[in-house]
Image 1 (cartoon, rainbow, N blue to C red):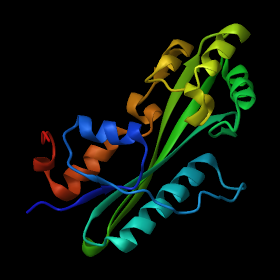
Image 2 (cartoon, helix red, strand yellow):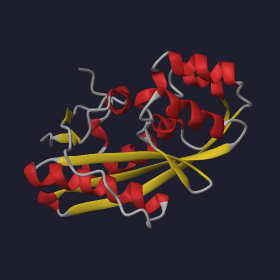
Image 3 (spheres, rainbow, N blue to C red):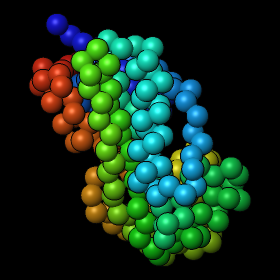
Image 4 (cartoon, one colour):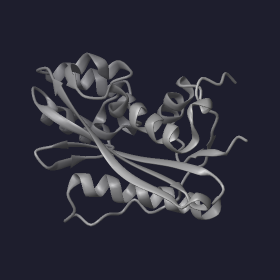
Length: 197
C-alpha cells in the first residue's frame, strides 16, 4: 500500500530534488509563520521553522508523511535571508565575497497517524572566491538572486561565485537529499524511490 507523501513547500528547487530520486509526492504550501525569536541560534531557527511548517500540514493531513524544510545562509552568526531588493542582494554578496559561509537547512518529518516526528539540521560550508563589484552587479541584474537565501543560486548562474563546498550540494539548493531519503527509507521502505511518473 502506498502512503501519501507531502512536501510542505512550493519551492520549485525542492520539488525538483525530490522528483530526481523518483519519489511521488504532493506539494502543499505551508502558511505557517516564518517569524522567529532572534535570540535563537541559526540551527534552532531552521529547526523551529521547518517543524512549524511541517506541523501545519500534518494537522490537516494526518495520514500523510510530511516533509518540510527551511534554509538559511549564515556568515559569522549573521543570517542572510532572501534579499528585499537588488541593493540588498549586492550588499550580501559583497559580504560573502572571499569568505566561507554556512548553509543550514532544518528538516522536519511528521506522520501523525504513525506517531512519527523528527527534526534535524544539515550544514554545508560554502567558500566564495573574490568577487568584483562588477561581477556582483551583473549577477544581481539577472534577477536570479532575489528569491534565494544569501542572494545566490548555486544550481544556476550563481555557480560562478562558488570556489568550493564541503558537505551536501543538495543542501545548498534547499533540500538535503541524503537525509530526506534516509528518513523515507526508515519509515516507508525502499520501494518509494525511482518511481517514474
